[in-house]
Length: 139
Image 1: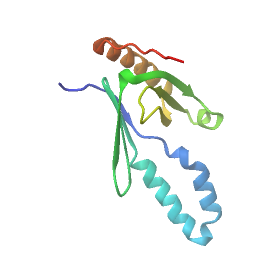
Image 2: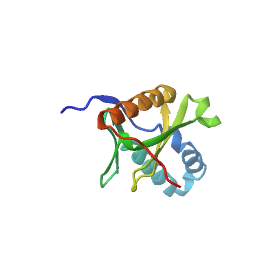
Image 3: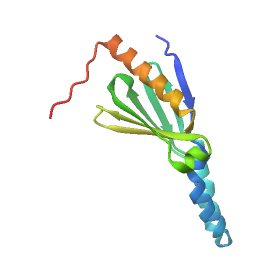
């Protein structure tokens, strides 16, 4: 069965702003230039895809790593808009899940975070209904 894509993208390079400023200040040392290039590549190769069934995160410059999270495992969705990111129209989404290996998944510095949060919420509910899954916490 073909999965329908809800959203696909990567974090903004604004996540590296502090690193870039420090590397610029110390660029006369040469090494900070390579640090800035590396940080650029790390964010550039970070791909996030959200389908109607799962969240797929692929990271890596030289070696690739792919992590998957089934959407029915998402317990809570939080949207954060730190001051600096709000200035440039970006936000962070944090997913709290019942997955043992990825209990917290963060999608940093994305545009239109409110829309994505709403699409995620709807997709999570639809997936839970299809799988007939209920989330119960025991304390």
